[in-house]
Image (cartoon, rainbow, N blue to C red; front, side, top):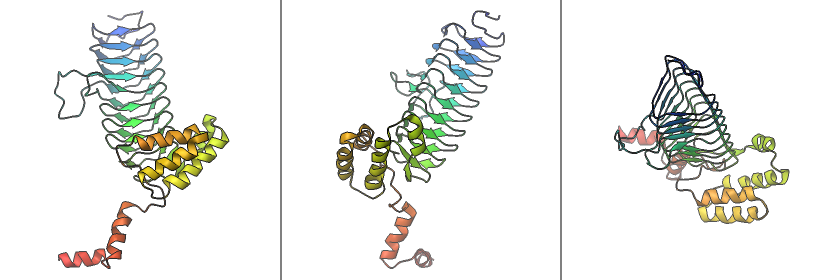
Length: 291
C-alpha cells in the first residue's frame, strides 16, 4: 500500500526497521531492508537495493539498479558477521549500477562524504573512505580500504588497488593505480604523476602563491627519485609558509604504500630493461638462452 507521506510506490518493499525522514521518495521495485536511515528528501528512483546498516544523507538521489550495503567481497567475511555497513553523505548523486559494499569492520562504515558524484558503474569496495566533493567517473573501481581525499577526481575506468590512497584535489586519468597519489597531483600513467592539478586548484580559489609552491614541491620532491626522509624534510621546509605543501609532507610521512613516482623516474618496465642493458644483456638474448 502506498505511503503518501513518504511517497513509497506500491511495488517497493520497505522493511519495518527502516527510518524515513520527511519527503523521502522510494520508487518502483526498490528494496530497502535492515536498519536503514534515509535522510530528508532522499530519492530512490527505481529498482534500487539498500541493505542495512546504512545511512543515506539528506538530499541524496540514487538512480536505478544501484546496490548499496550488500556484503563485502572478502573471503574472510562470513554472512551474519557484524558490519559497520555503509554511510552516504548529503546531496550525493549515485548513478545507475553503482555498487557500495558494506564494511568488514563492525564500527566503521564504508563511507562517502557530502556531494559525492558517483557516475555509472562506479564501485566502492568494502571499508573504502572517500571525502567531500569527490567525483568518480563511469567505471571507476576502488578496492577495499582505499581512501580518496576531498575534491579528488578519478576519470573513467580508473582502478585503485586496495589500501591505496588518493590525495586531496588529485586528478587520476583512467589508469590502474597501486601506489599512493599525493595531494594536488595529476596522474595519467600507471603509478606515475606528471604534474599538479593546476586547473582544479585555481577553480578552488587557492591563493596563487600556494599553487606556485605546490608546483615547486612537485619539481623538487616528486619528479626526481628521493629517499623518503629527504622528501619529507624538503616538503616541511617548503611548507613552512604554505599549509598545502605541509599537507603533502604529512601524506608522505603517513604512507604505508609506495608513493607514485614523478616523470624523472623511468617506468618499471624501462628500469628492468636498463638493468639488463647495464649487464650487457638484452631481452632477446635472454629469450635465446632459454630456448
